[in-house]
Image (cartoon, rainbow, N blue to C red):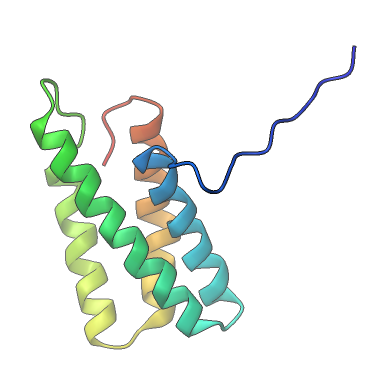
Length: 111
């Protein structure tokens, strides 16, 4: 029996955690190949999604986002941006925020 894959409709809203992960991964990929303007656009979109996800989570009956785990990476992201350290920013996204987002998506209480 042949499996059919269904393409996601780009006009349909994706769950916020999925959008967050897509923007984070896009930013990392774009920064790694030197597309800094596009990477920054994806990064800023990811930060908007993260803000929305945190707000939504705080309003839920059982919040899953551990803000204590999120605070230090966000402080480090700020310092990387302030110092115009794209490599440091990219490493933080790839090594910290993407894994936290994946934990959160799997329901392990990440981010």
